Image (cartoon, rainbow, N blue to C red):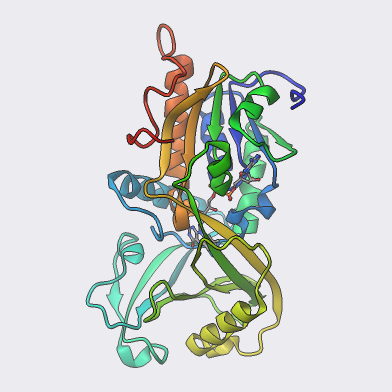
Length: 349
Ligand SMILES: Cc1cc2nc3c(=O)[nH]c(=O)nc-3n(C[C@H](O)[C@H](O)[C@H](O)COP(=O)(O)OP(=O)(O)OC[C@H]3O[C@@H](n4cnc5c(N)ncnc54)[C@H](O)[C@@H]3O)c2cc1C
């Protein structure tokens, strides 16, 4: 790898999805010099394919996840005051076909929930709860995050896919490397615990909807959702463990459209504008914190957020900045870069 030109940053962030960009912003706000390096620009990441709504989903929940989600909820609600960020506090419904007694976990933490009159729910759904949560138009939001990285003095570089973290160390002499590579972390960090769960969405012209809808159907993992974003609406969705094709599947797109029109008849005939596919990086535990060092550099992991990367982004980014501050700015010698403190406490990065 040819070293990148320019000043040596304090931190090299690998990845320009929602986790990499948020981490870069928190590191910059902590006063550190930051370069982001990525194979794919923000609008071609899994992050760009997300719906997206705040709410822990398809992520192994532990005590850290609740904290990161809460911190991110606060930050997204602040960002929602400015529509240019792509974040909007919206009202909507979480519905369940199975007639479950409790609201789904992804909705419960957002605040007050009001049970819906079942008669007013789409056909096939037995229970529903009305609530408010931040919804995020991801392409607009990723543009906003990119602008923030640059505004705070960060650098962005795009180039070939790295085969190993050692190649990141060849790119830059930054003493700290932050691994925000999403699914790419499986190869970069040699982490076999990371598995893809493919998601596909259909983007249509919005017929005038403002409220979101998330419906859990009877089959395990079958979720139907509608997220209106101004002139567009993102319709989903799919959860396909182990699938890695990035090509939109027309049969899946047709099924998504059918389910969404059944839930929201105003969508019938809405022009289809785009198809998006992403691979959710699912792991038994989110990998966050100091990991095995490479070439004398410290490595901080921040990957494995599953279906909740947007939901956890700011809480995780804050923790990355704290770890980097400890490694770079603490009194005396920094701790050894030998991975003796591991990212998930389980000895694996
Ligand atoms: C259909 C769908 C709907 C979703 N809905 C939601 C939702 O409503 N709410 C929510 O919170 N989450 C949602 N998610 C999950 C969320 O999108 C992910 O958790 C999140 O995007 C992960 O972000 P990331 O920054 O870790 O990874 P990514 O967005 O995948 O970014 C990874 C970055 O790392 C770079 N990279 C990877 N490997 C290498 C390498 N070897 N060398 C150089 N660069 C590399 C890539 O180029 C890219 O820039 C959804 C996902 C999908 C697919």
